[in-house]
Length: 88
Length: 110
Image: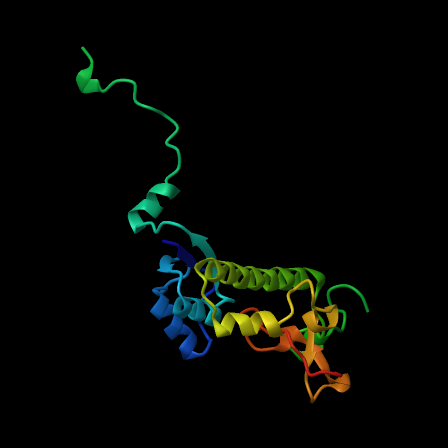
């Protein structure tokens, strides 16, 4: 099932209150938050209301917050050959 | 006339915060990038809906009425109609919240 991956890039400070309302309805409360919403006509209409503020991609799967954080984790730069507890 | 105490507007008049009458070229570049970002959002939404076989009035209306960044004339990109200005045009950066609102169309003939 396809989803819209919506990221809030620009804040709605100073814009009409309805704009903030649309962002809240989409689940966007802070800048740089990402939400996944199903591809539907009503979600498309909401995106069109805030199209200047968000980045939108179409994706096949939705990710949880923990999965998104795991994707951002950098490469640690080392790997464990042997645990100290396992050493003779 | 030159140097630190030259008579410029902020020095002779005190505090002066004015928006220049025209946009600088980096400002115009960033404005074009913002226009393109909005175009890409609309294109993404439209492609996703088309794949599902859905049609939305809002998206269709935008596609029919609004020019894309590439289709817009420089005159319409960087200036907008204002009935109170000389020659009926002012810089689009004079529009309140201009980096977060869409201002693409102007009255025909102006």
